[in-house]
Image 1 (cartoon, rainbow, N blue to C red):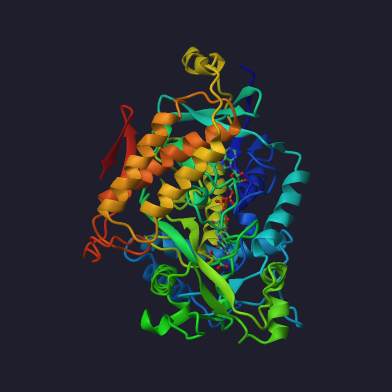
Image 2: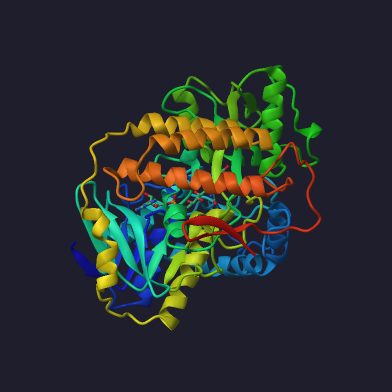
Length: 534
Ligand code: FAD
Ligand code: SIN
């Protein structure tokens, strides 16, 4: 199999991957960096981020690190790590200013001052945004331009990473597949920046690429994963049929005054939380779910008509256009919305600088679990986590890792033999299989869980596994994605069953109370089997 050496390999080209490429090329001025992405450059969850990115900036005198730390810890429901939260909050000033220096066009007022918005459970306006409600696109577009121009970065698009190579407990590289050919990229620095798992659920705000590959890659190579039961459901995804189904209606629309109402136009959030429409996301998602059960409809409404037309035009141009495309004029009509899987709090266990339990393997952004998000992420903290972790990872690599040549050992060659074996020709319809997986996860491992719903989901998952007979090598990129989705579904169901309490975004109707002591659930693959570690 063709193999090549690199100073560092980055898997994924969302915000964590793009910013890593920029910072690593600065940290290793003579280095050659490979960026692999299974879609085109920039296609990612990051591209669709709306509300914004948290920045605790020195010039925003209403804000402070103490206040942001307190809001983040409150949302995290006991599972956020104080030191990590404080570190990320403190670093946000430098990193946001670095993004500004790189040319990211954050929105400003007529005097050139940065604008800040508000979202659920934030006590002050501290969220920066681009083009009103297209923050992800604004950041991704600028960073993609810089990466594409960077001569140190070798870009491989439409190529999936299918295995991480390890020898003597250290990471050695990655096996790649472009849909036709396999190749090997060798490096002592591998950065997983593969994003989340939204596509495991029937309703999701995430694009097609969010199939959880990074969690499966890390699990299969023996890294520790943490808190895999915590899936965040966003309360307000557009409840329409067709291609715009589940398009996000940003929380910042509620931040600017919109309120959730029932069919008769009556507000209901006061029944669920003192912060009403700006309560933590899990509370609002469950409230919508309850109201949908009460009305028997599969949506509630968001009344944004209370926001003046000129504010809507300036702040929400993309959301307004999306609504209009679906015959909803948000200056006059209520918007039908429902909850959808949005973000994954659990992930590969790392330090604030992305170090995993395996030497040379880093995980950044949504695939990682740094201890920032805890049991429930505070809005707009994830883009911040991507950039602070990437910044710190590059600093760590610069100080601690030599750019060494990796030999293709006999041991590694032996482990690659499986990729040259012929597969029996069974063509799987991965669209059909995926849709059954998405339904079983939505029905059994969704917003409200119980032993009964989980056992049912487990049994449906076992049936799917019995149908899909690919243990290692697959025929197509879609098959690899589906294999990963089965692995991640198993990790989530097992972790949900293990957590016999309700906490943050994880709600079990058979265990509605929160235990006094918050504990992480850590898992690892040992001798081929999932086991819990302390
Ligand atoms: P992603 O941006 O998802 O990038 C993952 C990349 O990895 C993609 O390029 C993908 O193609 C690639 N990839 C995956 N697997 C493989 C593989 N096996 N081989 C090769 N490539 C692979 N957060 C906020 O903080 N503020 C917001 O306003 C906000 N709004 C959001 C709105 C929407 C609609 C969504 C979906 C999310 C939003 N989030 C927001 C969450 C945030 O966007 C994500 O958590 C964050 O962008 C994740 O970035 P990432 O770089 O970790 O992953
Ligand atoms: C949103 O704009 O509502 C999403 C913000 C986030 O997920 O952080």
